[in-house]
Amino acid sequence: MSFAKIYTRGVFGLNAPLIEVEVHVSQGLPSLTIVGLPEAAVRESKDRVRSAIINSGFQFPTKRLTINLAPADLPKDGSRLDLPIALGILIASGQLPDSQTDQFEFIGELALDGQLRKVSSVLTIALACQKQKRHLMLPTENLAEASQVQQLSLYTASHLKEVCAHFLGQHRLSPAHIEPISANQTTIADLSDVKGQLRPRRALEIAAAGGHSLLFRGPPGTGKTLLASRLPSILPPLNQDESLAVASIHSIAQQPYQFGQRPYRSPHHTASAVALVGGGCHFQRTMRHYKELCDKIKKVNNT
Image (cartoon, rainbow, N blue to C red; front, side, top):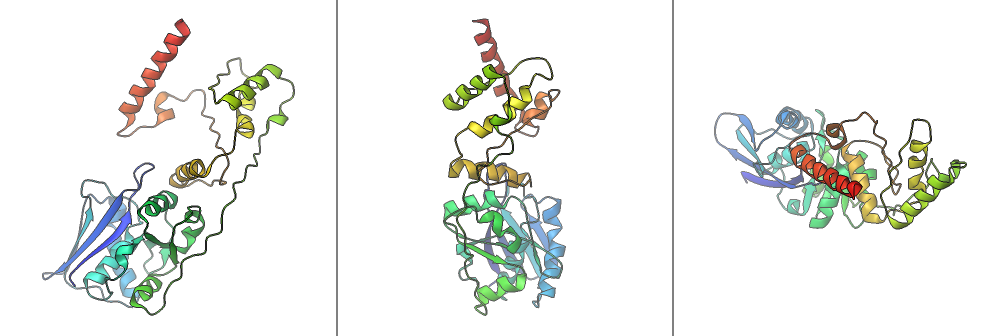
């Protein structure tokens, strides 16, 4: 078979769009071309993939290789495409069977010796994979993070050889056992730490009970930040969907997160609007919504 298709995922904000890695092996001078808006880390994957395939005991085809990352109009970044590209090359060159691979989605960075390394944004990818009801093959180091998604069939491997042996029928990988995660509601900052401040405490309780917005205003040192940081301790617990959404943001930012704990953000008072909402292609739309909100606040204040 000279053509292969492998499924994987990209990351675009909190979404993980499906990416089809299409590999075609044809006659011609030995070359490897990657198309489909690959960024630097993806373009460099061809060197990692070549060494990983050879060091795993397989042959890298000495033919013309064309790899298409569909959809072609979606930018592809990160090193998580190494594993699906390598599997696509092995299947297209006839070294691996193409059976059952359409039931899987693959992510993982390859070392030069074939080892699978940890990648980022796994939780966002796992949530999208669960909705499509496919199995997810990922590095062993990412199991703890991906296991937060329930009802998802996870397969882990630490080397390219293990993935290939699974599809060759030599050594079948078993689905990873996922322990149910209990949300931890413990918070370091608790409202009981605040002594006095009866009126602000009462305002916090009313805002937490009714889901209202709250604005503290006053000179420095009066306890505004102290009081605001204690608000999560009296808010209702996060449900499963909310916890996964918060954990996805921390996963993309590559920051640790205690599952089930409400987040607290404390931007500096000198932060600009750009710093608060971020830049990028969506900045103008976000700023338009921000200005509309400011206009509404002004109208309320005037009335």
